[in-house]
Image (cartoon, rainbow, N blue to C red; front, top):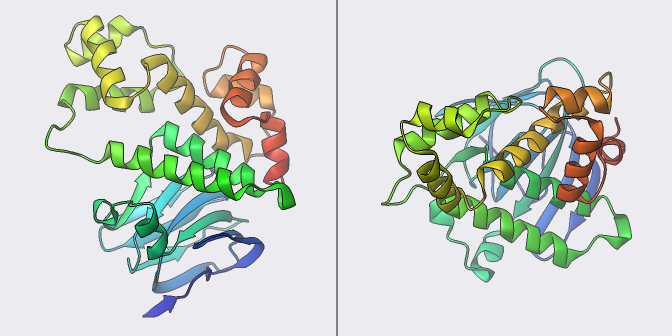
Length: 268
């Protein structure tokens, strides 16, 4: 089985940044199939365009624009690229980086598809930092990456697991992210009092229900922004925003740029 060395990813690198035990690559995937292999270091894949399928011993992950996958080192997998152009953004970290910042790697076994919208939006900010060329700030990149791991650590199941009813609420929000679901409806589905739902959601997810839904809609919109035939207004309505201006305002508050600027960054 082939081992990929530091900074090696299958495809054509559009951009490479190296900073303090981190290698960042923006890669166009050029192969329709990549046989079983593993990488010597842990890394993230953030899909910018197209589709990519990753298969490992535990199952299959189908990535679409906005999908974020974390790979533990030496985690064997193979890839299939469906027809069409696909582009991914990778951030690879050496073991020394984890040691330096005391990030507990034993918490992250195998590959994980990260679905928390707060984490995905943090990674979108990280991607934007790398598009600034000579102005890219290593301090910002390191800080955002540590924030990403902070969110991942917070979401790792502990001895005091989230209540099952709270997981049900999270599933409903992800399934119906574009709907304006009343608090009373969520509480009825979870069979808890609305006040208890609001309080416990904030305690476990570190954001309010409204903040979570807004972050989820912004994260989901990344997939639609990669489809150039959709206007920004169509993306806004598809993702549940009241209008285009509200979507643009929320996107800018989250990422510091407009949806149109993000499209330009990823070449759409």
